[in-house]
Picture 1 (cartoon, helix red, strand yellow):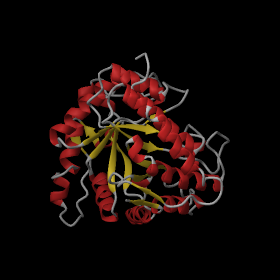
Picture 2: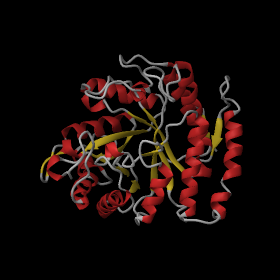
Picture 3: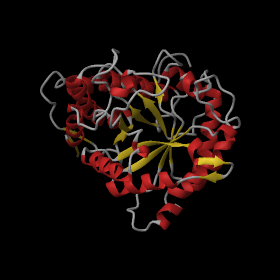
Picture 4: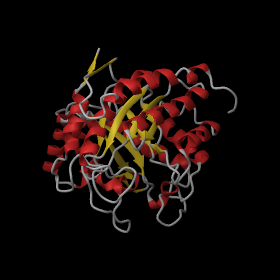
Length: 372
């Protein structure tokens, strides 16, 4: 789309810069004051804990309780399709039932990420890359089953009346398809739009009020840039299939996170889709590990975590932010065959489970936000 930006897009610039100046004024050392904002969306602050399915049940329950104590109210978690659908139409849900129950008891609502195609449904893919399904409609039965299980009125809640009811109302479809590694080696916005539409149709058939979130889209030169991919999704007819754009906003500074969110909001405005919200489904900084733009040391990691939570809360109404999810709860060891990289060191806890300064900063960031 060419020409001058619509008034709604141009009007964002000055207010966002004002918020940046005010919020970042305290980022040089002393903690910024308490941020008072309009009421935030439910579950605004969240956490990702990729390892949580693999830990013993008692450890998982302690972890979820600690996450709630730190101020998280949303747990973003991959629901691995390849792990759940073991054969056509046969679903193994025991581990996910336990996770949803433990999260609900801890006061957390799960944000599932539907990802990972079973081999018998997968398209051919380049070595080392994730494959979408050969037929995008193949995700429909899987998505319908999950909503019927964990959504409002789902069979899980009827079967477990002792569990506090925290039904899943938001569903994220895939992760980072604008990177070749997560889409057959070559991003394809048209193909992802088909998958998103199929999943959205299935979810809304069971829960018409469900919230559909696009895959978390990073902004990186290693794939299709975030705003470019988003424009491609609109060109592919994806408008109306999602209620929130998921973005994985890794930036050098807290201010960079907000400026990236503003660029996304401008794309939405240019496509006259102001109703769509933005959900920051990943962000983070490493305290240690290999050198990178995001490896900043323990003290700076803590400061950036605290300030980003306050900054996104202060900007939530202006930019229509749905939430902020930090990646991740705990450091993890290098993946087999991949080796070490900065993203394994973004945890609020180190690999042994000992808290970093960032944990106290996360708690300070969530607790320093009040709602008018």
